[in-house]
Length: 217
Image (cartoon, rainbow, N blue to C red; front, side, top):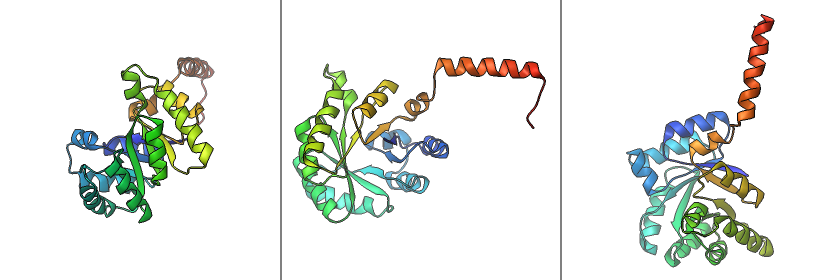
């Protein structure tokens, strides 16, 4: 499974990229606002840090507006992935942009039927939001299962990009269910490496090593 980091903070992106842990980046208007920077400027910098897809989201809600904004965003870098809302106009824009050779990420997916439409429109990625479904008392993981089954039934090439991930367990669960990508906050990606028994074992190794009085270099 690929990891995308869900942030517009270039310091977080550089750190995780240096660890070799990320395959791409997703941004959205809320993350751009949080960065406090111009969308074109910060997105260009992000694209220079990572080699994989960088999702940049349109803000227009109509087809013509989406296509105009997509034309600007696509000029930022070759690894831009145009992020579009899961609406009829968004799907129309997805089809047009995919046909033109652009990567597309259809976002704010909350049902298997929506995901089916996105695949038919040729989306590169579909972004089901599992955490937000959990927030309203539904099981977001059920959506990943349903989409995986439908896509496998018909050989759709659209990749399932599990989004709105809140915990390390979410990451494990979507991996077990066959999501192609998980887009995850930087803090959650780092938390994946943590385990109390790892810390306990290291403490014991270091204590024993100190007693030997040796040095490797």
